[in-house]
Length: 173
Image 1: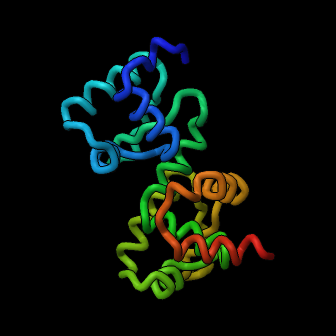
Image 2: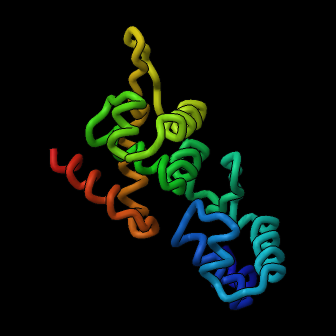
């Protein structure tokens, strides 16, 4: 990244915000920065075109990452960690896993259909595996080390203290 690329204060601020909160989506950027929507859209497009920021689509949001810092597998994990209930599900699976949908539903106090939807997305993304045990389906994190590493490194950019406590317990083992 050369100096002229980020000569504008707005570009520098947007780039730094994305670097501090990798995987952030547009609405959160808009909430966190004091720029008009059009200005933010223009500057993000400029940063993407200049190769300073990369874009990832998680199916619901377009998420932004500093260029060349995250490979595709890391972006997939970060996309999931940016979703509150996906993050909580991953935390429970890391701390106490493998678990079933009903066990996760009880722990998160959410409907099984909601948990099932998130688990389906996590499975499709390759972040969890499922194994049938009779009538039960048991879920487990595919790459626990990668998920834990990325959560730990970017912990300050998440605002979920419940997950923090669970992962602290898990790291204590």
